[in-house]
Image (cartoon, rainbow over all chains, first blue to last red; front, top):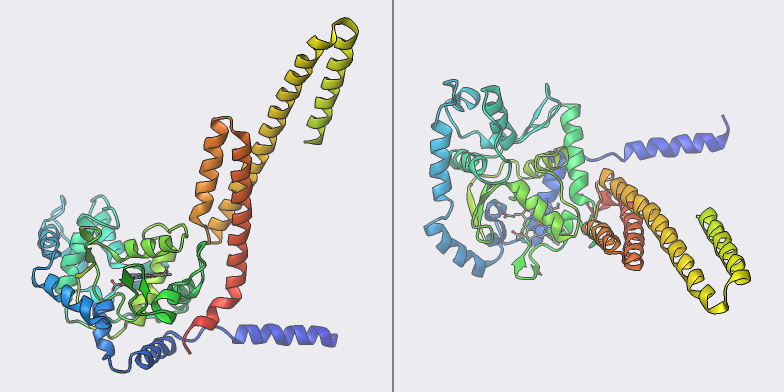
Length: 274
Length: 122
């Protein structure tokens, strides 16, 4: 072998060696990053998103939370959840006696070879029992998801990444999060990490940490409860990128990565945001 | 494309020679202009069709690369609308813009492959 070949081989192996860090190292590094940036804030507070870092906005939000607009969605969701399917079965046959299972989602389904979000699991349950799938982002699916989130309040996010395939899905989501996209050439982390807390038009950007604790969300601008992937689409559109399909592999992997970043944090959904 | 131009020129010169012998100067000019206009439209339409094909192919490539930009959809739509109205200059300009911007989006996709990792907190 010529020595030039040897160098090429060496370089190639170095490139392989610079693979992504493991999820737990990433998560810890992200926490350190925010703790340095906001030394006076308890990281657990980030479950409240931007309201953890903006006291004026926080006051308005706490007033909103006195009569939360998502309450109707929880009630509607509860009714839907408990209404039996045509075959006499119900969601409990898929999720067990406790509907509070949100802390386990998204999970990597080894048999299906992909990430299963709570919304995917709800629709899978429906299909298994002969019911039509519901639209992903708003409406009944968001309501059922709101009820399940409510039942999961107080539990800690507990995402598992324990197979090479699951790690690959996580890596894909991580790469997406840090990759610049759209005509404005901006990455998710550009707004939510490097420029966290800065004003963007009328909004202040919130930290990545805690981004998944409180979904689905009633948003003032929407005037209804919607799922997190609707927010993904909007953030993609903000940088003038073509958004991805709800529950596409891209967004499921993104949600998997993003939720893992908040592992161990307390669930407090559904939430309300401006 | 070249073939079209050449055949256009042939038609023009044939038309010109032909008519010069038989009819007066004044009658010749409108005939030549008419043929030239037809050739121009045919050429531009052909140009536009291949530009559009290219714009759409490149857009699909950006989509596969997961780096599609909204503006490219707008430009392709604008190009199509202008062409439907017969405004071929605007149509061509929009298709060319879409092609240029899709190339930028593909560059972004390529260069980001090695850049994103530096942004992950260590």
